[in-house]
Structures are given as structure tokens and as C-alpha cells.
Amino acid sequence: MYVLALNATSRRNGMIDRMLNIAVNKLNEMKSHIEIIYVNELNIKPCIGCMKCRVSGKCVLPEDDGHVIGEKLNSCDAIIVATPVYWGNITGQLKLLFDRNVYNMMSENKFGFPIPKQKGKKSIVLTACTTNKIGDFFAGESKGAHRAIKEIMHYSGVKIVGYVNKNNTKINREISGNIEKRIERLCSKL
Image 1 (cartoon, rainbow, N blue to C red):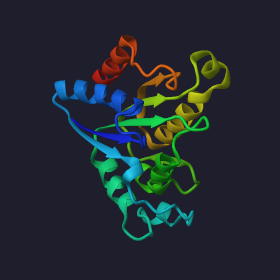
Image 2 (image 1 turned 45 degrees about the vertical axis):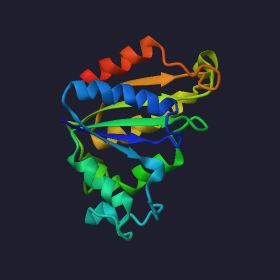
Image 3 (image 1 turned 135 degrees about the vertical axis):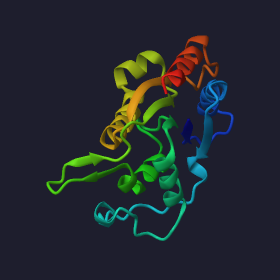
Image 4 (image 1 turned 90 degrees about the horizontal axis):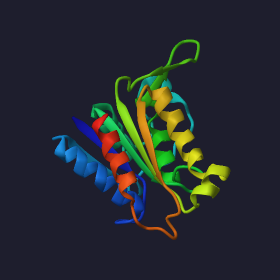
């Protein structure tokens, strides 16, 4: 199984990196091929909203990493989306990557209804935020990021098998055994 891991953190060895490493170790045990993409290191021009990709099936912008990752999205069997939570959402660079790959993720019928192009694939979502558990529950900090990824995956036809969020990362930099087990359990569902 080829698993594409989209790592949207800019902090090497930070919480998201460490959570993703747990997933990678489990997937290696399962003899999967994992490719980690460090989203913040990609050279991607912003989407210009021309909508031509919806008709032609390709982006009109000059070749950049957005196109390259699009091909990887098409060829992978499963996707891990790993992102810190910024302002209750995914990182801007991750959003940019998904914006540029709408044509790889979905098309639409003559009435404008979405047609998923990644059907049959599965995904897990790893997030981390500085908000404590109680604040996250009431403010919904991580829920905004989960909602954004859920929207993208839903219209792409990708089934999310689960989410793992690590709260309070400003104070507690440890990954509990429960979080580690949840990540490993979700990997086994890919």
C-alpha cells in the first residue's frame, strides 16, 4: 500500500512530526510504502480561481509542486493529513495545496454537482493545537481544522477513518500512550 503523508508543519521534530512518526512506524510494520511531503517546503503558486481545471482536468498555471503532488494524490492508496491548528483551521500552505488540486480530487457533472475522483481511498487526520482540552471543547479550535479536511475529503470521495488531536501543546509536549495507540489503531484501518 502506498500512503501519502501530507505534513503541514513547519517545525521539524515538533508535535505533528512526532505524531506522524508514530504512524510511519506502524505503517512500516505493515510493509506499506510511505512518502512524507513537507507541505511548507513546496513551491506552489496560489490558485487564481479561473475554474478552467474543472473543464480541462488540469491546472493552467506553470508547472510547480502543486502539479507534482497532484500526481502523487492520484497514485496513492491512502492519505495522512497532519497539520497544526492555526486560528481554528488547517495551515494556509495545506489549504493552498488542496485548492490547487481540486481537479485531481473532484470533477462535476453538467448540473454542477461534485463527482469524487479519489473514491475508495482512506485517510487519517492528525492535528495538534495549543488550546487546552476544555478550551478546545468549548471553542472548537481543532474542530475547525477537522471540518475543513472533512469537507475536502468528502467531496473527493476519500473516507476518513479517524482523527487524532493533541491538545495543550504549549505546556504539554508529551504524546500519551493513548494518543500513540489511537494513531496505530487508525493506521491499521488504512
